[in-house]
Length: 285
Image (cartoon, rainbow, N blue to C red; front, side):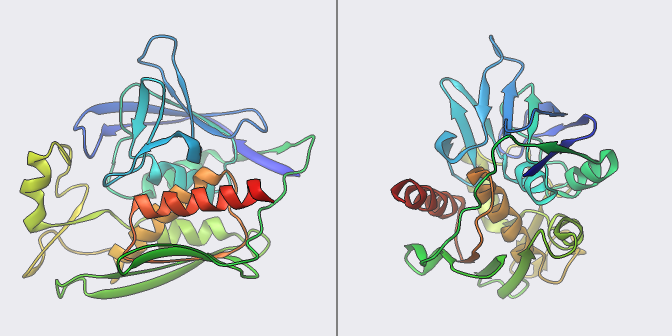
């Protein structure tokens, strides 16, 4: 079985959404079978934090990974870009507690990956692609996320907000490696979608110690009268961004199972609960 890593190193610097701290990230090629993992190069002994479901230790408005005292937050956009662009193995060195938000999307990451290109790697043992042969559901109130048996890997998301500028939106995107180049459609249709927030929630979130690094340059903001900082990149940019988050969170499985992932009004917490259910199912088998 073939895996892939980067052909060259990628460098990015920026401010974290929640911490407001500026960090530098170096995404480097990694050995076959090593997976995607973070390295906190600013801490003693440069601790390694694997990009795996077991490492998730917080899901409040972003996904945070940790090991021991070391952690790294808001990993979902970078991990989505790596996974969707077929980068199986990557060493992600970071000198702070949070991945930079950049423009609020994964566009910068996908463009950088496409620019440096990939290198094929051979595995001594073939990886078994997880198959979902029965529906798996996680729900909370009217919000849910599920994995349904399907002939291809597909991500479908729905959101519903009272603000007329957002309203009810749905979008679906297929990730099927044997049908053309799914990473091309990801780079065009999903990666550019930016994170978004509601105007009336900003002050409360900031008082709670969150979104310290948020600005009109890295997040869409919506109020009762419409978008504060248009134009949008897509008419349904908010729901496309939710797919981006879902892809990033489910990338912590290491490899996407063959299934239709369907979510409605879900959250990072529900995404990770579904990923854990899938892992539990595999272990049980």
